[in-house]
Structures are given as C-alpha cells and as structure tokens.
Image 1 (spheres, rainbow, N blue to C red):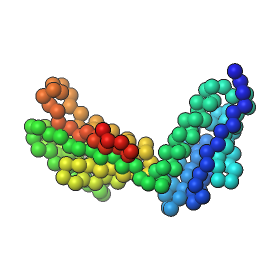
Image 2: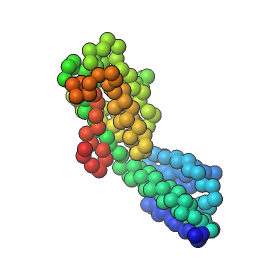
Image 3: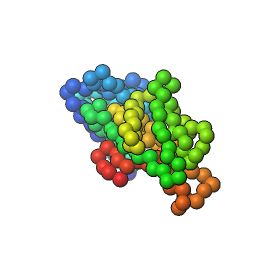
Image 4: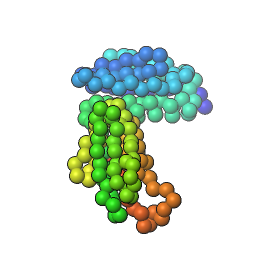
Amino acid sequence: MKENINEKIEFPESFDFGIENSTIYVKTNGREVKKTFNLRGINVEKSGNSLIFNVENGTKRHMKIIKTIIAHLKNVILGLKEDFIYKLEIAYVHFPATLEINKEKREFYIKNFLGEKRPRIAKIIPGAEVSIERNIITIKSHDKEIAGQMAANLEMATKIKNRDRRKFQDGIFIIEKSGRKI
C-alpha cells in the first residue's frame, strides 16, 4: 500500500545541522558528526530547527529507512550532548597481561597475553579516547559507532583460537556500555 510519508526530527537550539547530497552533519560546541545515508527516493528538507523527511507514494521500506535514519540522528544528538562510554575489563588466569597505549602511533598493546612473546596490537580509531586504570579500560567518544567499534576491536584482539574456551577464559570483555551494565 502506497501512502504519503511525512516524518520529522527536532534538534536542540544550540545545534547546527544541515544536509549536503546524502550526508547529514550535526555540529555543536566544536564537535561534529557526519553520517552518510542512502536517501534514494526520500526528500529531506531543513525547516527551522528540524529535518523533515518526505516521500510521496512511499512503501513500508521507505518508512523503515526513515525510522532508521531518525534513530541514528537521535544517537548523534545524545552523543554530542554527553559522550558514550564503554568500560572493558581484562581477565587473565594463566599469565598476567599488561596494557599499554602508544599515543603517537595510536595503538593499543596487550603484552604477555597467554605468555606470548609479541604483543597483540589494536589500532585506536580516530575520535575515540582510550584510557587504562589497572585492569579497566575506558573508551569515550561522542559517536556511538566509533565507541562500539573500538570496544569490539579490543575484544577481537584477545580472541583465543584453537584452545578450549572452558579452560582458557583470558581476554578483554565489555562490562559496561552507556546506559546499561552487562
């Protein structure tokens, strides 16, 4: 069933936003987030402090795309107001692993993991702030996708292969995300 779809998202007063081709940018307090979306068939207009999404003869698929874009933009607004914070913990049973950050190369080193001679390395994504306090790793970013991807990179850097997971439970694991504890 085709119908006219008209959805809008409101931005706070202090935010500057706009659309260029299929990229929507949002700025405030010196921070900026740009997101590129597939807007094929969807008209986007800036009106005051809101973005209006219009589709004539739209389908369910158009509605799903618009709702997804609005959800992403709500996360952008939340992130620009307050950083997304992920907390991870390093757990080890066999060998005490040590963590180190090289800020010049933007790399995260996990040394002596399972007694390995060479350190495991995870690249620090631009836009993510990583800090270590004992065995707790804190990741902060105003972009939810960057914070989540950095946490996933650290978990994957300590992935154990060809060993029994019941016995080798070492690794870096997410213990807290923004808004909820795991």
